[in-house]
Image (tube, rainbow over all chains, first blue to last red; front, side, top):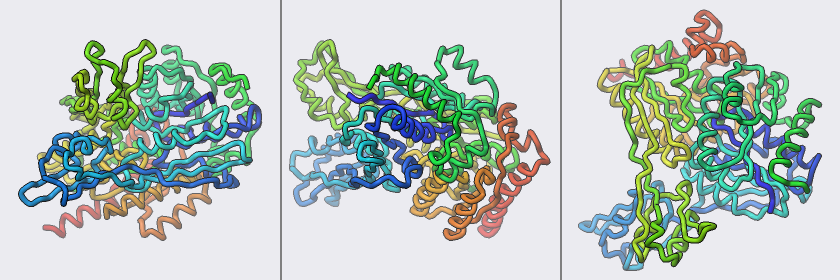
Length: 292
Length: 298
Protein backbone atom coordinates (compact mmCIF):
# COMPACT_ATOMS: atom_id res chain seq x y z
CA UNK A 1 0.00 0.00 0.00
CA UNK A 2 1.42 3.39 -0.94
CA UNK A 3 1.76 6.07 1.74
CA UNK A 4 -0.71 8.89 1.16
CA UNK A 5 0.09 12.45 2.22
CA UNK A 6 -2.32 15.36 1.75
CA UNK A 7 -1.24 19.00 1.65
CA UNK A 8 -4.02 21.33 2.83
CA UNK A 9 -4.38 24.80 4.39
CA UNK A 10 -7.80 26.36 4.95
CA UNK A 11 -6.73 29.76 3.69
CA UNK A 12 -5.84 30.07 0.02
CA UNK A 13 -2.45 31.24 -1.18
CA UNK A 14 -0.44 30.03 1.81
CA UNK A 15 1.78 27.79 -0.30
CA UNK A 16 0.10 24.38 -0.69
CA UNK A 17 1.16 24.03 -4.29
CA UNK A 18 4.69 25.24 -3.52
CA UNK A 19 5.06 22.58 -0.83
CA UNK A 20 3.41 19.81 -2.89
CA UNK A 21 5.53 20.48 -5.95
CA UNK A 22 8.76 20.66 -3.89
CA UNK A 23 7.94 17.48 -1.97
CA UNK A 24 7.36 15.66 -5.25
CA UNK A 25 10.68 16.94 -6.57
CA UNK A 26 12.71 16.10 -3.47
CA UNK A 27 11.09 12.73 -2.81
CA UNK A 28 12.33 11.77 -6.28
CA UNK A 29 15.77 13.15 -5.49
CA UNK A 30 16.21 11.69 -2.01
CA UNK A 31 13.89 8.73 -1.77
CA UNK A 32 12.14 7.09 -4.68
CA UNK A 33 11.11 7.76 -8.26
CA UNK A 34 7.85 5.96 -7.66
CA UNK A 35 5.90 8.99 -6.51
CA UNK A 36 2.54 10.31 -7.69
CA UNK A 37 1.37 13.90 -7.27
CA UNK A 38 -2.42 14.29 -7.53
CA UNK A 39 -3.68 17.84 -8.05
CA UNK A 40 -7.02 17.72 -6.20
CA UNK A 41 -7.52 21.50 -6.50
CA UNK A 42 -9.71 20.74 -9.51
CA UNK A 43 -11.24 24.22 -9.61
CA UNK A 44 -7.85 25.81 -10.08
CA UNK A 45 -5.24 23.14 -10.83
CA UNK A 46 -1.74 24.63 -10.99
CA UNK A 47 0.74 21.85 -10.29
CA UNK A 48 1.51 21.23 -13.97
CA UNK A 49 2.71 24.83 -14.41
CA UNK A 50 5.87 23.82 -12.56
CA UNK A 51 6.61 20.79 -14.76
CA UNK A 52 6.74 22.17 -18.30
CA UNK A 53 8.70 19.11 -19.49
CA UNK A 54 6.27 16.48 -18.19
CA UNK A 55 5.05 14.11 -20.92
CA UNK A 56 1.29 13.67 -21.34
CA UNK A 57 0.29 10.02 -20.96
CA UNK A 58 -3.48 10.00 -20.91
CA UNK A 59 -6.49 12.28 -20.98
CA UNK A 60 -10.10 11.38 -20.36
CA UNK A 61 -13.45 12.87 -19.48
CA UNK A 62 -14.82 12.56 -15.97
CA UNK A 63 -18.57 12.14 -16.05
CA UNK A 64 -21.60 12.65 -13.91
CA UNK A 65 -24.65 10.52 -14.68
CA UNK A 66 -27.64 12.73 -15.30
CA UNK A 67 -31.07 11.12 -15.56
CA UNK A 68 -33.49 11.94 -18.34
CA UNK A 69 -37.24 11.42 -18.34
CA UNK A 70 -38.86 9.88 -21.39
CA UNK A 71 -42.25 11.60 -21.48
CA UNK A 72 -43.66 8.90 -23.81
CA UNK A 73 -43.30 6.37 -21.00
CA UNK A 74 -43.82 8.71 -18.02
CA UNK A 75 -47.22 8.50 -16.32
CA UNK A 76 -46.58 11.78 -14.43
CA UNK A 77 -47.14 10.07 -11.07
CA UNK A 78 -44.58 12.43 -9.43
CA UNK A 79 -43.01 9.63 -7.40
CA UNK A 80 -39.55 10.71 -8.61
CA UNK A 81 -40.26 14.26 -7.45
CA UNK A 82 -41.01 12.93 -3.96
CA UNK A 83 -37.82 10.85 -3.94
CA UNK A 84 -35.55 13.69 -5.12
CA UNK A 85 -34.09 15.46 -2.07
CA UNK A 86 -32.46 18.12 -4.24
CA UNK A 87 -35.53 19.62 -5.93
CA UNK A 88 -34.03 18.78 -9.29
CA UNK A 89 -37.18 17.34 -10.90
CA UNK A 90 -40.22 19.19 -12.18
CA UNK A 91 -43.30 17.17 -13.18
CA UNK A 92 -46.55 18.90 -14.14
CA UNK A 93 -49.18 16.23 -14.91
CA UNK A 94 -51.70 18.72 -16.30
CA UNK A 95 -49.47 19.67 -19.22
CA UNK A 96 -47.59 16.33 -19.33
CA UNK A 97 -44.29 18.02 -18.48
CA UNK A 98 -41.40 16.18 -16.82
CA UNK A 99 -37.81 17.39 -16.71
CA UNK A 100 -34.65 17.13 -14.62
CA UNK A 101 -32.45 20.14 -13.92
CA UNK A 102 -28.86 18.90 -14.35
CA UNK A 103 -27.55 21.85 -12.31
CA UNK A 104 -29.38 20.65 -9.19
CA UNK A 105 -29.01 16.89 -9.73
CA UNK A 106 -26.58 15.05 -7.41
CA UNK A 107 -26.69 11.81 -9.45
CA UNK A 108 -27.83 9.80 -6.43
CA UNK A 109 -30.02 7.45 -8.46
CA UNK A 110 -33.11 7.85 -6.24
CA UNK A 111 -35.39 8.81 -9.15
CA UNK A 112 -34.48 5.61 -11.02
CA UNK A 113 -35.57 3.59 -8.00
CA UNK A 114 -38.71 5.70 -7.66
CA UNK A 115 -39.87 5.30 -11.26
CA UNK A 116 -42.20 2.35 -11.88
CA UNK A 117 -42.65 3.08 -15.58
CA UNK A 118 -39.05 2.67 -16.79
CA UNK A 119 -39.24 6.24 -17.97
CA UNK A 120 -35.90 7.37 -16.51
CA UNK A 121 -32.48 6.58 -17.96
CA UNK A 122 -29.09 8.07 -17.19
CA UNK A 123 -26.66 9.65 -19.61
CA UNK A 124 -23.03 10.63 -18.91
CA UNK A 125 -22.40 14.34 -18.73
CA UNK A 126 -18.85 15.70 -18.60
CA UNK A 127 -17.80 17.52 -15.41
CA UNK A 128 -14.15 17.90 -16.35
CA UNK A 129 -10.98 16.24 -17.54
CA UNK A 130 -8.50 13.92 -15.89
CA UNK A 131 -4.98 14.14 -17.29
CA UNK A 132 -2.00 12.01 -16.49
CA UNK A 133 1.61 13.09 -17.09
CA UNK A 134 4.92 11.46 -16.35
CA UNK A 135 8.42 12.76 -15.66
CA UNK A 136 10.50 9.65 -16.36
CA UNK A 137 8.00 6.82 -16.70
CA UNK A 138 8.07 6.25 -12.94
CA UNK A 139 6.97 9.51 -11.32
CA UNK A 140 3.52 10.66 -12.37
CA UNK A 141 1.29 13.69 -12.10
CA UNK A 142 -2.46 13.30 -12.10
CA UNK A 143 -4.51 16.44 -12.65
CA UNK A 144 -8.24 16.98 -12.45
CA UNK A 145 -9.63 20.05 -14.16
CA UNK A 146 -13.22 21.02 -13.43
CA UNK A 147 -15.28 22.00 -16.46
CA UNK A 148 -16.06 25.70 -16.23
CA UNK A 149 -19.65 26.09 -15.01
CA UNK A 150 -19.79 22.70 -13.27
CA UNK A 151 -20.53 22.63 -9.53
CA UNK A 152 -19.42 18.99 -9.16
CA UNK A 153 -15.90 19.55 -7.83
CA UNK A 154 -16.25 16.91 -5.10
CA UNK A 155 -17.35 14.20 -7.53
CA UNK A 156 -14.39 15.04 -9.76
CA UNK A 157 -11.97 14.69 -6.82
CA UNK A 158 -13.53 11.32 -5.97
CA UNK A 159 -13.15 10.17 -9.59
CA UNK A 160 -9.56 11.46 -9.66
CA UNK A 161 -8.66 9.45 -6.58
CA UNK A 162 -9.98 6.23 -8.15
CA UNK A 163 -7.47 6.38 -11.01
CA UNK A 164 -4.64 3.82 -11.17
CA UNK A 165 -1.58 4.91 -9.17
CA UNK A 166 1.16 3.44 -11.41
CA UNK A 167 3.11 1.51 -8.76
CA UNK A 168 3.54 4.66 -6.68
CA UNK A 169 5.09 4.15 -3.25
CA UNK A 170 4.22 7.66 -2.10
CA UNK A 171 1.13 9.60 -3.18
CA UNK A 172 0.82 13.35 -2.59
CA UNK A 173 -2.59 15.03 -2.67
CA UNK A 174 -2.54 18.80 -3.31
CA UNK A 175 -5.80 19.94 -1.68
CA UNK A 176 -8.11 22.82 -2.60
CA UNK A 177 -8.41 25.67 -0.06
CA UNK A 178 -11.28 25.91 2.43
CA UNK A 179 -12.75 23.49 4.96
CA UNK A 180 -15.80 22.11 3.16
CA UNK A 181 -16.54 18.87 1.31
CA UNK A 182 -13.77 19.03 -1.35
CA UNK A 183 -11.17 19.18 1.44
CA UNK A 184 -12.79 16.26 3.29
CA UNK A 185 -12.76 14.19 0.10
CA UNK A 186 -9.10 15.05 -0.55
CA UNK A 187 -7.87 14.21 2.95
CA UNK A 188 -10.27 11.29 3.65
CA UNK A 189 -7.82 8.44 2.96
CA UNK A 190 -4.56 10.30 3.76
CA UNK A 191 -2.16 8.71 6.26
CA UNK A 192 -0.82 12.15 7.17
CA UNK A 193 -1.85 15.73 6.43
CA UNK A 194 0.56 18.62 6.06
CA UNK A 195 -1.09 21.96 6.83
CA UNK A 196 0.59 24.91 5.19
CA UNK A 197 -0.08 28.21 6.92
CA UNK A 198 1.26 31.73 7.29
CA UNK A 199 1.76 33.68 10.54
CA UNK A 200 -0.99 36.25 9.86
CA UNK A 201 -4.43 36.65 11.51
CA UNK A 202 -6.15 35.30 8.35
CA UNK A 203 -3.76 32.37 8.14
CA UNK A 204 -4.28 31.52 11.82
CA UNK A 205 -8.08 31.82 11.74
CA UNK A 206 -8.38 29.48 8.75
CA UNK A 207 -5.80 27.08 10.21
CA UNK A 208 -7.90 26.73 13.37
CA UNK A 209 -10.95 25.79 11.27
CA UNK A 210 -8.90 23.19 9.41
CA UNK A 211 -7.42 21.76 12.64
CA UNK A 212 -10.99 21.35 13.99
CA UNK A 213 -11.92 19.52 10.81
CA UNK A 214 -8.90 17.18 10.85
CA UNK A 215 -9.44 16.37 14.51
CA UNK A 216 -13.05 15.48 13.75
CA UNK A 217 -11.81 13.27 10.92
CA UNK A 218 -9.24 11.70 13.25
CA UNK A 219 -6.27 12.55 11.03
CA UNK A 220 -2.66 12.93 12.12
CA UNK A 221 -1.14 16.15 10.89
CA UNK A 222 1.66 18.68 11.26
CA UNK A 223 2.20 22.27 10.16
CA UNK A 224 4.59 23.98 7.77
CA UNK A 225 4.84 27.71 8.51
CA UNK A 226 5.35 29.48 5.20
CA UNK A 227 6.27 33.16 4.82
CA UNK A 228 7.80 33.00 8.30
CA UNK A 229 8.92 36.44 9.43
CA UNK A 230 5.75 38.15 8.19
CA UNK A 231 3.00 38.75 10.73
CA UNK A 232 3.36 37.97 14.44
CA UNK A 233 3.81 35.18 17.03
CA UNK A 234 0.11 34.37 17.61
CA UNK A 235 0.32 31.38 15.29
CA UNK A 236 3.25 29.92 17.26
CA UNK A 237 1.43 30.46 20.56
CA UNK A 238 -1.58 28.62 19.19
CA UNK A 239 0.47 25.70 17.86
CA UNK A 240 2.30 25.46 21.16
CA UNK A 241 -0.89 25.53 23.21
CA UNK A 242 -2.60 22.94 21.00
CA UNK A 243 0.50 20.75 20.91
CA UNK A 244 0.68 20.80 17.15
CA UNK A 245 4.04 20.01 15.66
CA UNK A 246 5.82 22.36 13.27
CA UNK A 247 7.51 20.16 10.70
CA UNK A 248 9.11 23.00 8.77
CA UNK A 249 9.45 26.75 8.41
CA UNK A 250 9.95 28.55 5.12
CA UNK A 251 11.13 32.14 5.58
CA UNK A 252 9.42 34.88 3.59
CA UNK A 253 11.65 36.00 0.77
CA UNK A 254 10.48 38.34 -1.99
CA UNK A 255 13.01 37.00 -4.48
CA UNK A 256 11.74 33.44 -3.91
CA UNK A 257 8.13 34.66 -4.35
CA UNK A 258 9.19 36.07 -7.70
CA UNK A 259 10.64 32.71 -8.78
CA UNK A 260 7.33 31.05 -7.87
CA UNK A 261 5.50 33.78 -9.78
CA UNK A 262 7.02 32.82 -13.10
CA UNK A 263 6.62 29.09 -12.51
CA UNK A 264 10.35 28.44 -12.10
CA UNK A 265 10.13 27.01 -8.58
CA UNK A 266 12.13 23.91 -9.41
CA UNK A 267 14.67 25.63 -11.63
CA UNK A 268 16.44 27.68 -8.96
CA UNK A 269 16.31 26.10 -5.57
CA UNK A 270 18.22 27.83 -2.77
CA UNK A 271 20.36 25.46 -0.67
CA UNK A 272 18.42 26.19 2.54
CA UNK A 273 15.16 25.23 0.82
CA UNK A 274 16.68 21.94 -0.29
CA UNK A 275 17.85 21.18 3.28
CA UNK A 276 14.44 22.12 4.63
CA UNK A 277 12.58 19.68 2.38
CA UNK A 278 15.12 16.96 3.05
CA UNK A 279 14.30 17.29 6.77
CA UNK A 280 10.57 17.44 6.15
CA UNK A 281 10.71 14.26 4.07
CA UNK A 282 12.66 12.42 6.76
CA UNK A 283 10.09 13.53 9.37
CA UNK A 284 7.10 12.48 7.29
CA UNK A 285 8.63 9.14 6.41
CA UNK A 286 9.21 8.47 10.07
CA UNK A 287 5.63 9.41 10.88
CA UNK A 288 4.04 7.29 8.19
CA UNK A 289 6.38 4.34 8.63
CA UNK A 290 7.57 4.35 5.03
CA UNK A 291 11.09 2.94 4.91
CA UNK A 292 11.38 2.13 1.24
CA UNK B 1 -28.83 48.84 -5.50
CA UNK B 2 -25.66 47.31 -6.89
CA UNK B 3 -23.63 44.38 -5.66
CA UNK B 4 -19.88 44.30 -6.24
CA UNK B 5 -18.31 40.88 -5.66
CA UNK B 6 -14.58 40.39 -5.10
CA UNK B 7 -13.26 37.20 -6.67
CA UNK B 8 -9.90 35.89 -7.77
CA UNK B 9 -9.94 32.24 -8.79
CA UNK B 10 -6.71 31.60 -6.90
CA UNK B 11 -6.80 31.91 -3.12
CA UNK B 12 -4.68 34.32 -1.09
CA UNK B 13 -4.44 37.08 -3.68
CA UNK B 14 -5.84 39.74 -1.33
CA UNK B 15 -9.63 39.67 -1.79
CA UNK B 16 -10.44 40.12 1.89
CA UNK B 17 -7.75 42.75 2.52
CA UNK B 18 -9.07 44.83 -0.37
CA UNK B 19 -12.74 44.19 0.52
CA UNK B 20 -12.07 45.47 4.05
CA UNK B 21 -10.21 48.50 2.70
CA UNK B 22 -13.13 49.27 0.37
CA UNK B 23 -15.50 48.96 3.32
CA UNK B 24 -13.63 51.79 5.04
CA UNK B 25 -14.04 54.18 2.10
CA UNK B 26 -17.47 53.13 0.80
CA UNK B 27 -20.57 55.22 1.39
CA UNK B 28 -24.14 53.88 1.30
CA UNK B 29 -22.96 50.29 1.50
CA UNK B 30 -23.62 47.03 3.35
CA UNK B 31 -21.12 44.18 3.45
CA UNK B 32 -21.29 40.45 2.90
CA UNK B 33 -18.68 37.76 3.54
CA UNK B 34 -19.49 35.03 1.02
CA UNK B 35 -16.28 33.05 1.64
CA UNK B 36 -18.22 30.96 4.10
CA UNK B 37 -15.81 28.07 4.60
CA UNK B 38 -12.82 30.27 5.46
CA UNK B 39 -14.42 33.57 6.45
CA UNK B 40 -11.91 36.27 7.47
CA UNK B 41 -13.56 39.65 6.84
CA UNK B 42 -14.85 39.74 10.43
CA UNK B 43 -11.25 39.71 11.69
CA UNK B 44 -10.84 43.25 10.39
CA UNK B 45 -14.40 44.53 10.66
CA UNK B 46 -14.72 43.20 14.26
CA UNK B 47 -18.50 43.14 14.10
CA UNK B 48 -20.92 42.98 17.02
CA UNK B 49 -23.31 40.16 16.29
CA UNK B 50 -26.95 41.30 16.35
CA UNK B 51 -28.66 38.16 15.05
CA UNK B 52 -27.61 34.53 14.84
CA UNK B 53 -29.38 32.14 12.47
CA UNK B 54 -29.03 28.46 11.76
CA UNK B 55 -29.20 27.23 8.19
CA UNK B 56 -31.20 24.06 7.87
CA UNK B 57 -28.67 21.82 6.26
CA UNK B 58 -28.56 18.51 4.40
CA UNK B 59 -29.71 15.13 5.72
CA UNK B 60 -27.31 12.57 7.10
CA UNK B 61 -28.37 8.92 7.27
CA UNK B 62 -27.89 6.79 10.40
CA UNK B 63 -28.20 2.99 10.71
CA UNK B 64 -29.96 1.47 13.71
CA UNK B 65 -27.80 -1.51 14.75
CA UNK B 66 -30.72 -3.20 16.51
CA UNK B 67 -32.81 -3.37 13.34
CA UNK B 68 -30.08 -3.85 10.71
CA UNK B 69 -29.80 -7.42 9.34
CA UNK B 70 -26.59 -6.66 7.38
CA UNK B 71 -28.25 -7.44 4.05
CA UNK B 72 -26.04 -4.69 2.56
CA UNK B 73 -28.67 -3.61 0.05
CA UNK B 74 -27.92 -0.01 1.10
CA UNK B 75 -24.22 -0.48 0.30
CA UNK B 76 -25.21 -1.56 -3.20
CA UNK B 77 -27.51 1.42 -3.75
CA UNK B 78 -25.33 4.16 -2.22
CA UNK B 79 -23.60 6.01 -5.03
CA UNK B 80 -21.33 7.90 -2.63
CA UNK B 81 -19.51 4.92 -1.06
CA UNK B 82 -20.69 6.23 2.29
CA UNK B 83 -21.72 2.89 3.85
CA UNK B 84 -19.10 0.44 5.10
CA UNK B 85 -18.68 -2.59 7.34
CA UNK B 86 -17.37 -1.70 10.77
CA UNK B 87 -14.27 -3.56 12.00
CA UNK B 88 -16.51 -4.86 14.81
CA UNK B 89 -19.07 -6.14 12.28
CA UNK B 90 -22.29 -4.41 11.26
CA UNK B 91 -22.71 -1.47 8.90
CA UNK B 92 -22.10 2.22 9.42
CA UNK B 93 -22.52 5.40 7.43
CA UNK B 94 -19.67 7.91 7.14
CA UNK B 95 -21.42 11.25 7.71
CA UNK B 96 -18.78 13.11 5.68
CA UNK B 97 -19.45 10.95 2.61
CA UNK B 98 -23.24 10.88 2.98
CA UNK B 99 -24.83 13.16 0.39
CA UNK B 100 -28.22 13.19 2.14
CA UNK B 101 -30.18 11.69 -0.78
CA UNK B 102 -32.09 9.36 1.60
CA UNK B 103 -32.19 6.55 -0.95
CA UNK B 104 -30.79 4.06 1.60
CA UNK B 105 -33.57 5.02 3.99
CA UNK B 106 -36.19 4.33 1.31
CA UNK B 107 -34.86 0.98 0.09
CA UNK B 108 -33.97 -0.55 3.49
CA UNK B 109 -36.30 -3.58 3.87
CA UNK B 110 -35.96 -3.44 7.68
CA UNK B 111 -36.56 0.29 8.00
CA UNK B 112 -33.29 0.39 9.95
CA UNK B 113 -32.12 3.69 8.47
CA UNK B 114 -33.29 7.14 9.43
CA UNK B 115 -31.98 10.59 8.48
CA UNK B 116 -31.22 13.59 10.62
CA UNK B 117 -30.52 17.17 9.69
CA UNK B 118 -26.94 18.26 10.03
CA UNK B 119 -27.30 21.67 11.60
CA UNK B 120 -23.80 23.06 11.80
CA UNK B 121 -24.11 26.08 9.56
CA UNK B 122 -24.68 29.51 11.09
CA UNK B 123 -25.06 32.95 9.63
CA UNK B 124 -25.07 36.32 11.35
CA UNK B 125 -26.23 39.88 10.90
CA UNK B 126 -23.75 42.20 12.60
CA UNK B 127 -22.92 45.77 13.17
CA UNK B 128 -19.45 47.05 12.29
CA UNK B 129 -17.79 50.46 12.39
CA UNK B 130 -18.38 50.71 8.62
CA UNK B 131 -21.96 49.45 8.54
CA UNK B 132 -23.90 46.20 8.51
CA UNK B 133 -22.05 42.95 7.83
CA UNK B 134 -23.72 39.63 6.99
CA UNK B 135 -21.38 36.69 7.49
CA UNK B 136 -21.38 32.97 8.26
CA UNK B 137 -19.63 30.14 10.02
CA UNK B 138 -19.81 26.81 8.31
CA UNK B 139 -19.60 23.55 10.22
CA UNK B 140 -16.38 21.59 9.61
CA UNK B 141 -16.57 19.51 6.45
CA UNK B 142 -20.08 20.66 5.54
CA UNK B 143 -21.45 20.19 2.04
CA UNK B 144 -23.64 23.19 1.78
CA UNK B 145 -21.28 26.08 1.18
CA UNK B 146 -23.21 27.05 -1.97
CA UNK B 147 -26.51 27.17 -0.07
CA UNK B 148 -24.94 29.22 2.72
CA UNK B 149 -23.49 31.69 0.20
CA UNK B 150 -26.96 32.11 -1.32
CA UNK B 151 -28.44 32.63 2.15
CA UNK B 152 -26.00 35.36 3.30
CA UNK B 153 -26.34 37.17 -0.01
CA UNK B 154 -30.14 37.04 0.13
CA UNK B 155 -30.11 38.55 3.63
CA UNK B 156 -27.63 41.26 2.60
CA UNK B 157 -29.88 42.28 -0.28
CA UNK B 158 -32.87 42.42 1.99
CA UNK B 159 -30.99 44.73 4.38
CA UNK B 160 -29.74 46.91 1.54
CA UNK B 161 -33.29 47.26 0.24
CA UNK B 162 -34.75 48.04 3.66
CA UNK B 163 -32.10 50.61 4.54
CA UNK B 164 -31.86 52.16 1.09
CA UNK B 165 -28.18 51.30 0.75
CA UNK B 166 -26.92 51.80 -2.78
CA UNK B 167 -24.10 49.25 -2.69
CA UNK B 168 -23.29 45.78 -1.48
CA UNK B 169 -19.64 44.80 -1.22
CA UNK B 170 -19.31 41.01 -1.20
CA UNK B 171 -16.08 39.22 -0.36
CA UNK B 172 -16.20 36.06 -2.47
CA UNK B 173 -14.73 32.56 -2.17
CA UNK B 174 -11.74 31.25 -4.15
CA UNK B 175 -12.12 28.72 -6.97
CA UNK B 176 -14.74 28.38 -9.69
CA UNK B 177 -16.95 25.63 -8.22
CA UNK B 178 -20.33 25.64 -6.51
CA UNK B 179 -19.77 28.41 -3.90
CA UNK B 180 -18.39 30.72 -6.61
CA UNK B 181 -21.31 29.95 -8.91
CA UNK B 182 -23.63 30.83 -6.00
CA UNK B 183 -21.69 34.07 -5.44
CA UNK B 184 -21.84 35.07 -9.12
CA UNK B 185 -25.53 34.42 -9.70
CA UNK B 186 -27.28 37.78 -9.87
CA UNK B 187 -24.38 40.01 -8.82
CA UNK B 188 -23.85 43.23 -10.77
CA UNK B 189 -20.09 43.62 -10.92
CA UNK B 190 -17.06 41.49 -10.28
CA UNK B 191 -13.85 43.01 -8.98
CA UNK B 192 -11.04 40.58 -9.79
CA UNK B 193 -8.04 40.64 -7.45
CA UNK B 194 -5.18 39.10 -9.40
CA UNK B 195 -1.63 38.41 -8.22
CA UNK B 196 1.17 38.36 -10.78
CA UNK B 197 1.97 34.66 -10.71
CA UNK B 198 1.46 32.07 -13.46
CA UNK B 199 -1.05 30.38 -11.16
CA UNK B 200 -2.83 33.67 -10.48
CA UNK B 201 -3.20 34.38 -14.19
CA UNK B 202 -4.27 30.82 -15.03
CA UNK B 203 -6.91 30.82 -12.27
CA UNK B 204 -8.17 34.32 -13.09
CA UNK B 205 -8.62 33.19 -16.70
CA UNK B 206 -10.86 30.31 -15.64
CA UNK B 207 -12.93 32.59 -13.42
CA UNK B 208 -13.29 35.24 -16.14
CA UNK B 209 -14.53 32.53 -18.50
CA UNK B 210 -17.10 31.46 -15.89
CA UNK B 211 -18.22 35.04 -15.22
CA UNK B 212 -18.56 35.47 -19.00
CA UNK B 213 -21.37 32.89 -18.93
CA UNK B 214 -23.21 35.12 -16.46
CA UNK B 215 -22.77 38.26 -18.52
CA UNK B 216 -21.37 40.30 -15.61
CA UNK B 217 -19.17 43.39 -15.89
CA UNK B 218 -15.66 42.69 -14.67
CA UNK B 219 -13.07 45.11 -13.27
CA UNK B 220 -9.59 44.08 -12.20
CA UNK B 221 -6.82 45.12 -9.85
CA UNK B 222 -3.36 43.57 -9.79
CA UNK B 223 -2.18 43.08 -6.22
CA UNK B 224 1.53 42.82 -5.26
CA UNK B 225 2.26 43.72 -8.88
CA UNK B 226 6.01 44.16 -8.30
CA UNK B 227 6.50 40.54 -7.17
CA UNK B 228 7.05 39.82 -10.84
CA UNK B 229 6.91 42.61 -13.43
CA UNK B 230 6.98 40.23 -16.35
CA UNK B 231 3.92 38.26 -15.24
CA UNK B 232 2.21 41.58 -14.40
CA UNK B 233 2.82 42.53 -18.04
CA UNK B 234 1.25 39.29 -19.21
CA UNK B 235 -1.81 39.94 -17.01
CA UNK B 236 -2.16 43.49 -18.34
CA UNK B 237 -2.08 42.13 -21.89
CA UNK B 238 -4.64 39.47 -21.03
CA UNK B 239 -6.98 42.03 -19.43
CA UNK B 240 -6.63 44.35 -22.40
CA UNK B 241 -7.42 41.57 -24.87
CA UNK B 242 -10.52 40.68 -22.88
CA UNK B 243 -11.65 44.31 -22.53
CA UNK B 244 -11.45 44.19 -18.74
CA UNK B 245 -10.57 47.58 -17.21
CA UNK B 246 -7.51 47.47 -14.95
CA UNK B 247 -8.23 49.96 -12.16
CA UNK B 248 -4.93 50.02 -10.22
CA UNK B 249 -1.72 48.10 -9.66
CA UNK B 250 -1.01 47.77 -5.94
CA UNK B 251 2.63 47.22 -4.94
CA UNK B 252 3.77 44.57 -2.49
CA UNK B 253 4.18 46.17 0.93
CA UNK B 254 4.49 44.52 4.34
CA UNK B 255 2.46 47.45 5.70
CA UNK B 256 -0.62 45.50 4.54
CA UNK B 257 0.26 42.74 7.02
CA UNK B 258 1.02 45.32 9.76
CA UNK B 259 -2.43 46.83 9.30
CA UNK B 260 -4.00 43.36 9.45
CA UNK B 261 -2.19 42.64 12.73
CA UNK B 262 -3.83 45.77 14.21
CA UNK B 263 -7.22 44.64 12.84
CA UNK B 264 -7.29 47.80 10.76
CA UNK B 265 -7.77 48.40 7.07
CA UNK B 266 -4.87 49.94 5.19
CA UNK B 267 -6.92 53.14 4.83
CA UNK B 268 -7.30 53.40 8.62
CA UNK B 269 -3.69 52.41 9.27
CA UNK B 270 -2.04 54.74 6.74
CA UNK B 271 -4.76 57.04 5.37
CA UNK B 272 -2.41 59.11 3.23
CA UNK B 273 -0.30 56.31 1.80
CA UNK B 274 -0.14 55.51 -1.87
CA UNK B 275 -2.02 52.28 -1.42
CA UNK B 276 -4.85 54.06 0.42
CA UNK B 277 -5.13 56.48 -2.47
CA UNK B 278 -5.45 53.51 -4.79
CA UNK B 279 -8.25 52.08 -2.64
CA UNK B 280 -10.12 55.39 -2.97
CA UNK B 281 -9.49 55.24 -6.70
CA UNK B 282 -10.95 51.71 -6.95
CA UNK B 283 -14.04 52.78 -5.02
CA UNK B 284 -14.51 55.90 -7.12
CA UNK B 285 -14.23 53.97 -10.39
CA UNK B 286 -16.82 51.47 -9.21
CA UNK B 287 -19.13 53.91 -7.46
CA UNK B 288 -18.96 56.47 -10.23
CA UNK B 289 -20.25 54.06 -12.86
CA UNK B 290 -22.94 52.93 -10.44
CA UNK B 291 -24.06 56.44 -9.58
CA UNK B 292 -24.23 57.33 -13.27
CA UNK B 293 -26.31 54.25 -13.95
CA UNK B 294 -28.63 55.09 -11.07
CA UNK B 295 -28.95 58.63 -12.42
CA UNK B 296 -29.72 57.29 -15.89
CA UNK B 297 -32.54 55.16 -14.53
CA UNK B 298 -34.04 58.18 -12.85
